Amino acid sequence: MEFKIRYYKSAKDEHRHLRETYGTEFARTFDQWLLDLRSAAERGERSGSLDAFEVFTEIIEGKQSSSAWKESFRRFARESLIDQIKTIYTVLKKRCPPYEFRMSTAWFHLLDFIPAEIQAYYFVDHTEGQIIFSKFELCGLDEEEP
Image 1 (cartoon, rainbow, N blue to C red):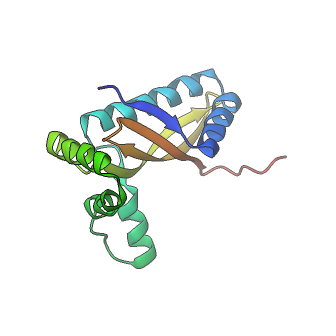
Image 2: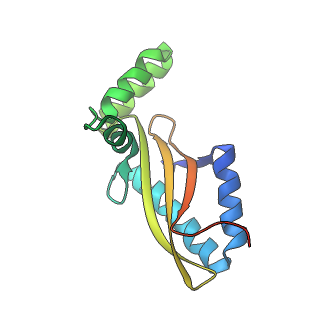
């Protein structure tokens, strides 16, 4: 099943701004990166990305979290019976947490010559078959207007 790509409003605005600002070659490679993240999510692969929930827990609390499984269970407990059945089916079929908060980083050339790192933060919803981007962050550049 091909996952849908969705965006939170602020992420959609960031996506549009990056594509319009940094050139056609950047836009092409940036969009390909997002498709690669979607493909990895469809296959249940985690290489090339990190569990963002674990990273943030380690930064804030100074210890490792108990993983996406615990967070998925909390979400499962709040769902309707039908959604719980879908979630159980997903877990049995894919053998991975049904919901994951991931982050990934890639290097690009802005305006075809300025190297820059972009971080993407996104949710993978294996139950509904979608990847939802929540934030794109351009790192290492001074973004102040001249």
